[in-house]
Amino acid sequence: MSFPKGFYWGGATAANQLEGGWQEGGKGVSCPDICTGGTATVSKRITPVLEEGTFYPSHDAIDHYHRYKEDIALFAQMGFKMYRFSIAWTRIFPNGDEEQPNEEGLKFYESLIDECLKYGIEPMVTISHYEVPFHLTKKWNGWADRRMIDCYLNFCKAIFTRYKGKVKYWLTFNEINSATTPMGGFLSQGILNEIKTMDFMDQVDNPNNRFQGLHHQFVASALAVKMAHDIDPNYQVGCMQIMATSYALTCNPEDEIVNQQKGHLMNWFCSDVQCRGKYPNYIKRYFKDNNITVHMEPGDDDILAAGPVDFYTCSYYMSNCQTADKFKESGKGNILGGVPNPYLKASDWGWQIDPIGLRYSLNEIWDRYQKPIFVVENGLGAYDKIDEDGKVCDDYRIDYLRSHIQQMHEAVLDGVDLRGYTPWGCIDLVSASTGEMAKRYGFIFVERYDDGTGDFSRRKKESFYWYKKVIETNGEDLD
Figure 1: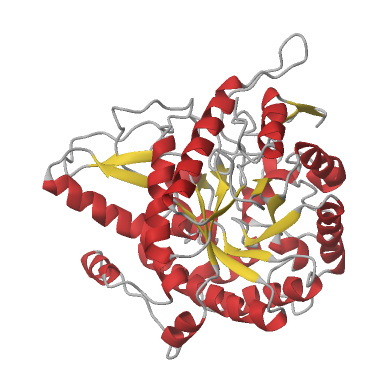
Figure 2: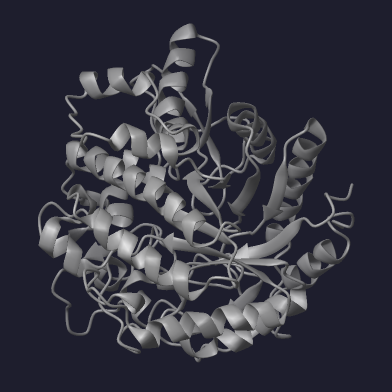
């Protein structure tokens, strides 16, 4: 049952969801810093002007900024081989458009990286993880403006140069394909369209801006790949996608066509560009049918062709079904669209649990691209509680992870070149979609709550000890 020798077991986080210290070390304001808390039923809000007395979860998050050594030591106790984290753009360039980087920010991440290397943990760094500088949102409407490319590349140059010889694996954009949906405009691209207070789920959407923003990100990613290889030939640069596996709800051919079209847009469009180096033909019809016009500069095609990524990574949490029946209602947790699958159970947030879908998806990815694959996000958001004896018994999380690891192994046996697995939120952190702490993913419980209380103390959940054993046995012992 064991995985390939040298398989990277680890965990994943994002700067804005765990660091805190939002005004320390010269850090500027990023888009998550203007988002309030929310719940499973009440949307978090975007407030361009901060409200006195309102709770902003990213401002303190779980205080990793001051406790990273403690946290990395806990990861080392589990036996992590890899830690995927992100660098906050506004720690390095507070406004995003400065010429020179902020030295204090560079030193912070250098210390964090050195702490990983001390324990033999390989860093995998996400360059842009849902954290566009808010200054660039106000100035240019984020990635809708092509000038973002130069700012991003200046950011890349600073960190590629500073961490040469210490970091090998880089990801250009987190879940870049989220911007094929209205939710991803602000989340991924810093596109707000109207600078006003609004619910996160009720953003003023402009599809043309989103897809123009994606083109700018594609060009930026391709140029970053070339820059990375020029600075250090040992650098490996990957893409990062949401794998939103979907099935036709019925064997009605109309459902099959709808499912294929949804899959093309959500699951394959962005990775086709980043892995193959060119726009796929099917997107032309989508643009035409939806009155979307993407402006490309002369030479952009050559840039994309010259800058495909070295490897593929994805998040995988759930699957859904697609149907041509307009009267079918989407499920509670289908934030990416689709309708519920009658054969699957769901989490407390309505995300349908589908381990076999992970095996299916990994085979599809490998067959399509023939590039090494990492699953860099996977996990169960759940309501954890501390028992009277001080333990956090999260058997439901162990069951979820076990079933997905089993299916990853099946994919390896199928011939998929799977290199690593870094479950999401290896330590409890703020939810990106809902802005709450109650939706916990971690192996480590953090005493921080949605009313802003808690002393940030850490305690090991039962899943901590289970995952430690999984890593020790290279996936052989999943009991």
